[in-house]
Length: 193
Image (cartoon, rainbow, N blue to C red; front, side, top):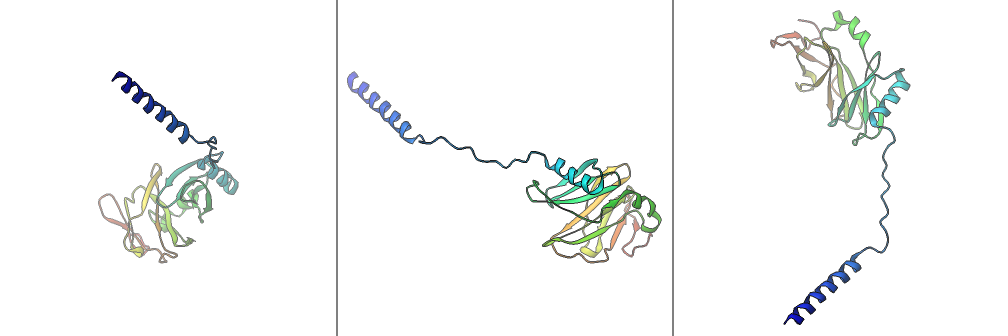
């Protein structure tokens, strides 16, 4: 009986060795060519911003939903469109948000300013601008009363933006701005209330 068990174990072992040898590939695996950029997207965008505007201080925000990147230079903030994977720069979105212009035009514009760019690419438009700290809530009335995204740049200065999956946004853009107490401080008619 011991002989039968020993022969059975040897047969199973030999079968396992033959199976593993036959299932092994005959050619060594060829490593896949990975297209890994030598510079990061942040560095690449900063290089483009520097070439276009003279300098690039930092990247403020990557928005994965809209493929937008906001890059800061000494004179303002530039929205940049990238591909879906955030691996390639596509284009600058003009006009740039200018710090000096925003500071000088406060009396005329109120607590926010805005820019609209239609047809950045097929079915993509954007409204964006600066907001002062007193503007706690912004509602874009001309686009169905939506609230835009916003992020803090520095003390008392915010960037707000809304991306639309359509070729054109309604112009002129009508917004209502509320303060921390929920009171309207700027109405959709373009006049400070």
